[in-house]
Length: 330
Ligand code: CP3
Image (cartoon, rainbow, N blue to C red):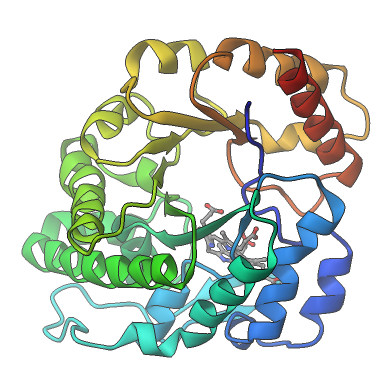
């Protein structure tokens, strides 16, 4: 049976989300409020027959806990105090886990209240992606300052990556111990890494995080998401030590089953934009095509990136129906 859930399923495409969201204007405070975390995590399960819930939080809660002055301003996305490459203090030894206690408590509550058959996913951003936001101080189309720092302050840059590895492992360990069933690492900006540094900035840091988790007796499956990393996904699948690789919508699944590590599962990769138009004759075809290619493989049906705020609830329902029906057929 092919399980199904959606990246960013808990967000703004469900109008009821805004009712919950209104209860706390400050998004950081929202992510630190147990009641609101729980309500937002459960919301998509009220609308859809999903096999997993993803805990409501944000990858930027780690930089927030590292005192980077993270802010979410309406219509401007996230911002924070940019790090100066080479700055000597590199933010070590902060107890970020204790600052994210509400995340822990919400996971424990949700694991005890969700049906046994619903998986609960904990997550974190990957070191490279967090470094991108921390150096740039905001989102960017090319993360040029981050890439510049990689070349000009290399030793410092790798020390930042190393520091982030530890914080990420700590936060994932905390989520595992609190009751998460699966862990996911989002490398949303992995396509910004110069190819010659892909190993050093994406694969090895991910493998180190998995190694640290295993050394702490956490055996949960880990999903890695090297977003838009193209042909580098092949090496990532063999060497990053993840148990499942999530694919973006540009990846040819026939290429993936031929070339990626056959010992790990695949998650993906419907284009989230296919869920925006109210009628697309290609939606059903595309979902069935994915299911046909991935039949008999260890596969989790998902979108190839987060659901957008304008995606239609009926389309999401339609996709779930097709997948469930297909499951019954085989
Ligand atoms: O299903 C879910 O939405 C679960 C919770 C979740 C959020 N962010 C909540 C959120 C998850 C899994 C994330 C991950 C995340 N956050 C990523 C990795 C996935 C990806 O999209 O590539 C990244 C890069 C971020 C950083 C971030 N957070 C950005 C760029 C923004 C603003 C624009 C955007 O994409 O929404 C956020 C804010 C944010 N995180 C919102 C939500 C629901 C919207 C804020 C609001 O409601 O005001």
